[in-house]
Image (cartoon, rainbow over the protein chains, first blue to last red):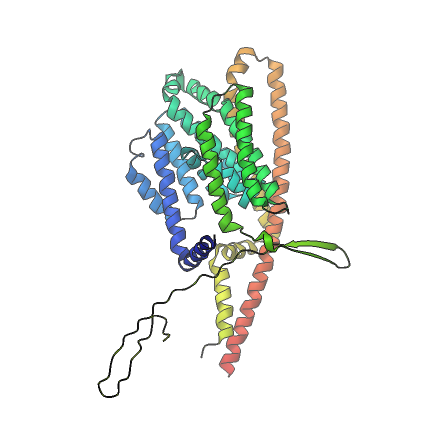
Length: 324
Length: 133
């Protein structure tokens, strides 16, 4: 286990040295993934669905703030929806404007979470997002998670049901069919309820003072997801395949445990309990030390022996750090 | 001759200036508090109204079929009255939240810029001391 912590300290050191490049690299890769996934799922406009367009957009967004990826992804989504119908594109644009007006305007940085949710759905690990947001964030992340869920279900419905939408009568008919199918999708509401309860439970449990609260929070978050989805499916007669759900939950738990390793790793065996008071309060404090492992720095010493003919002296060559 | 204290101070000030927090703070502190609040209240009003109208249209389209098939005029009038009440309540809530947020943001920005200005004065005194010696 100490090797894992050493690796963590090593990664922290590397990040500290090259954070500028790593951040920009991550931004580029993330942007490229978002645009490629959009093109793959709803690439109805051939010109905009080319990989070169996704690459150019990703490169441009690398040099802009992170929220530029969300703006570009929103615009791309509207453009792709125009390939289905102008009415659908207007509805999608209206939904994105409503999200901006009521939420993103106040918290533009959470646009990253909105983009992560559809990506997680496509990678079959959607349950990781509410668990991780509950660990590192707050219940305020419920809103961007629900927004991301809505965006995914809109994309998913259009990708699967484009013939139904196009076959509807007129623009208003297409829009009505689209809105009804998306907003009356019971599966979406069940998943939304599961994510909401998951993030609330994970946040509440990880804030508690008992040992291994974070691990308990992660596992309970995954369990509540499964329970709510199963109960919702039975109650509202929705079909969900359970094997991908359970497998996705297990992978989500593993991911969350890895995140926990970097964000919050403490040694409960060395907890200290303190009690003191001042004029106003009595303090009962539990101090849990963080796990910190010094990383050993390897130095290579080269010793070259050079025999002097007359005196017989030996020369020692200095190593890379300048030490003998 | 490099003065270590001066370099440390200049580095701290440059970091504050360069990062987004410093730029935003300096921009916000150029406004009077009332002007800053008024500007943001106006934007909140516009965004909320536009968002609410769009939301209303989306909800209306979702339920258009039900309304056309079975809805009577009284249901429509009642829905309209509820929508107006919700709009007014939502708008008041948004404007109150915006006002409080702007007030705090302006006050915090002014505090940080005050510290920055104090550092500027300290830096100026260091230069003056150096030029005298």
